[in-house]
View 1 (cartoon, helix red, strand yellow):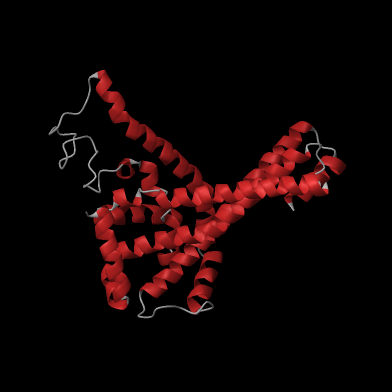
View 2: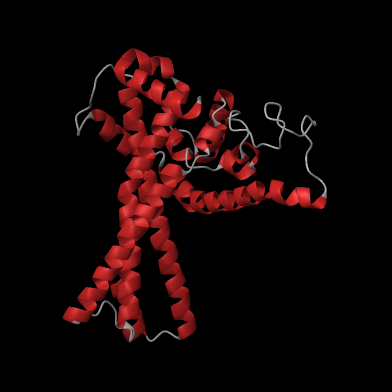
Length: 291
């Protein structure tokens, strides 16, 4: 649909290059926001279903159960505004937090060269390891706990929206308070799942882009009316493959987020309703984070 509208404006409307640039920026922004809203709805819906399963002593729920219908209805009505707001701001805020974290991680390497290193046992050093937030044993020693943006706007917001129906600005701060109270800020700051999903989406997007180039070269199919068929075929297929794959893979991301939130909130209830899974998760948790 975007390509059809773009071709119409480029051929029939006769817009100038300046206005065409504005249209392209608007299309990119609307495409990005739409995809993020769809991913937010998927996150919140998955979180609500997992929350329902968490509290009942059953191994599975029917695919068209009432939990799916009710959660999807709530996310498309009363919680839709919060999800739209989250889809607009969460992505840029996570990017800013990662850049800030990189600077914070590089800071201990830069400060000693200036003669301002933190001495072991000083008031600003970690009480458990004697260094400046370098202890792996202390889960609170994490840039996540000191970042104001990540405390209020984070990927856990959608899970709280789906589970409890909070507003967007409340959900992020409540998630941060929950993990800080449990001492899990270092655990939740691990971006392994997000990185794996991003890399998978990049591989799928690159493969789709190569397929688009093959189709354009072999069949002579033109994706747009522009006179750069190779470039347009590559970019259109790249963005389409990347965002569609990231949308489907966001179900996995939402599931992991919802499980961590539920496990932090009600581990006893999980142990009572799903004893075997609770024991397996507890053993794995001790192996990777408490060893």
